[in-house]
Image (cartoon, rainbow, N blue to C red; front, side, top):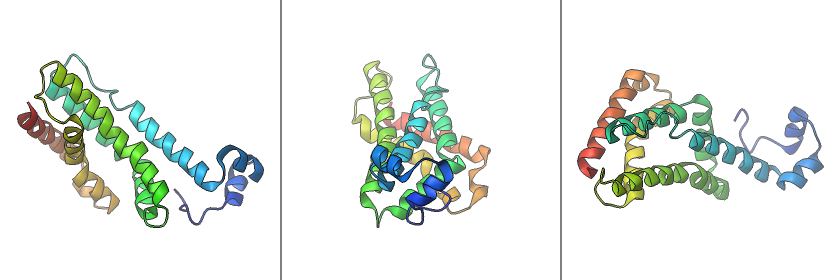
Length: 179
């Protein structure tokens, strides 16, 4: 994150964390394998905590608001934003790594929310529909403005008040369209 993928060498990594080049190559197959493992770990940490603040006994609207607020707080974390910025910049020169990030990060988040939507549909809380598409629409309603604002250094658009406003509006819109 500090230097970017292209500028970092295996020698730089060994100098920073110790060990040997041989160990890194044996364990990860090289810089790409090590980078992939780091990205997968970042993504897994976000996904592990996806439902941390969601009270399963609460109304669907309250669950959506908790889910949306927690999700935004995670993905708007400066370190996660830097990872996202790096992955977007790498997309053209390293499409396999960028595709791996999309599958391990955003696509997996969509799938987790889709699973939650399917549960709500099975319980009669949400109308039938393509859960994956609904998950994509809900998360994209949340992230668009705030993530782009921070990626472009427009910090005033991402106050806690604005985030809360966006999450509540997205939850209401989602429920009115899917409920």
